[in-house]
Image 1 (cartoon, rainbow, N blue to C red):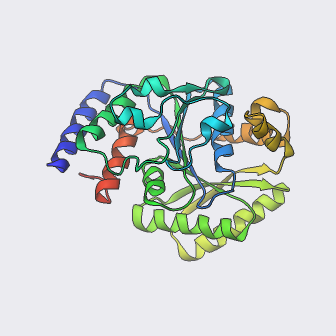
Image 2: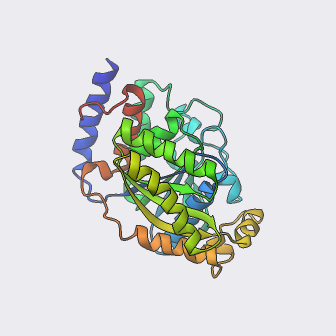
Length: 296
């Protein structure tokens, strides 16, 4: 019954999106472990994209330790759990951040989308559909680790940015994440961000360490898309509850984020129905329930 319900809902959504022309980039920012600066990468990249005229939405997908709103100095009165409970619409929980970036605060401390009823699934998909024509890019800031929820967000996205820093545990955990996504979930392309490096050379060496292991054991394609330098101004911006690209736009880290945003704008925008927001949520939910997408 549940499987039929989701298939029927998906069919209705496909008919609806044929009337829409706008597609959206969906980018998961993940890292395998905590402490690699993943959230900083998410919000600074979002802000840099917004400064380029993009309409950007950030989903705080850390359902246990939500912190995007705190890092940006904005207060979330409601979050995704209130949408799921039917207390408000998704638009009503959106918070506007720097450069016009919008944020969906996480439903912190809940089981999130794992235990939703079919009716809640449909409502969530529809609520994302209603935002479709308002945004160009969705950035999903995942939790740390390789939990089922992290994997669900990553495999439902069109692009996966893996943030690594020059620590053995960071490389090991990034490899574990890439291995799981490739071998069990059919994700074969990963964009790598070397974060908090002392030089461009160090960033390239860090990427080389990771790619050497993946080339040997996995059938995946890795691309180094950014080296973000260690910059004390990032810490200063965090203390001010701002993004570095706004607080200190001419510093090395800010310039690197601006470069990453420029590169993202060169990536192809999906030209099929899976480029719509409701299809991102649909893929995530269905794969979470069944291990693979129904009807694929």
